[in-house]
Length: 227
Image (cartoon, rainbow, N blue to C red; front, side):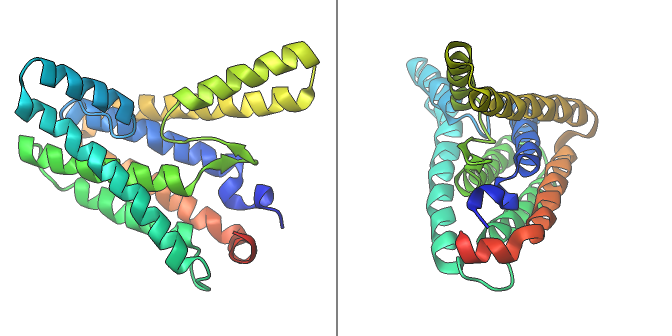
């Protein structure tokens, strides 16, 4: 089975992950101190603004999640290297289980300056694990925790369709736009549920990852042979 046919590469999986990605960004911004869990570019900009104001403690709330994001990439690659041939769980499922536990724990950290910093760090870590572990949809390089790259690729492929009339380019462009749409849906759901449930809303994101965890059992055996 080709990688493009594996469940980790399927559009359904990418859609669920994009919903979780949008949800977490809305969640941390609304109830955890106006920090973006996924968009580290935004956090870098906000950190620069705080530094320009001489607010060094305020800048600190952005640098820690950024470092956590970097750490998540390193740990994701470590798990992949050491558990790539695991016969019981696929290495991506191990990462998903890790993410779910972290999000559940985050739901029980009361809102305060210190706890919000811890939560944002944990959520940024989770998002980096996700973006590093799930990098393609139907063979296309797609991110499920941010949209800028996806939007560029979607527009580029749309231009290719207009100039070459290639149906493949149109199909690929629509897949990028589809993932962006699900990210927006996730952000809307995150905003709505967070406004009602507060910090406990993050449990919905954990549930979304749990669905992906079980989806991967569909082709786990094939992935263990080829991934």
